[in-house]
Length: 182
Image (tube, rainbow, N blue to C red):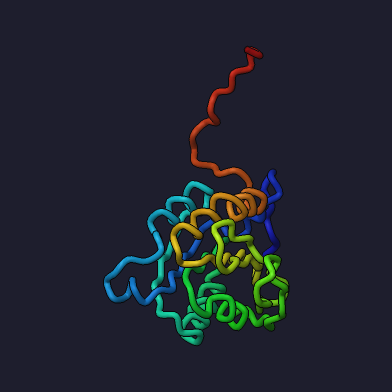
């Protein structure tokens, strides 16, 4: 079966866009706080890619790599991996991408990112995020700190999702615009 493209150029072969979210945080597993998954799921839905699956895992590279590989087989439009620990490494392993050195723009230590990945600047400080495409899925890796997560989502990530997926189609008409010139 061939691929089907909509009027806006998006690939519609796999049906409606969907997202999966993987939270990497032992605090959540122990019943404590962690990355704000509800906030992130609401943002994904607002971007037109509602979350269809939420998984919470410990920061162990083999466990995380297996889950990311399984998600890539399910082929969501977007896979968001949030947390601290070996996130970049696990995504590279799951996608079959070697890790390559990437200089830190802020003069810090050199980073290892999956080949072909683009770093996402972290305006709140700390480790950058990563965006990489694998098997038709856009994989976004973000830190587990809520302030950093929100700062990165509100800027670079939202822009990439808008470019990749187009404007959200939530069934509502666009807001009225004042065309009177006043």
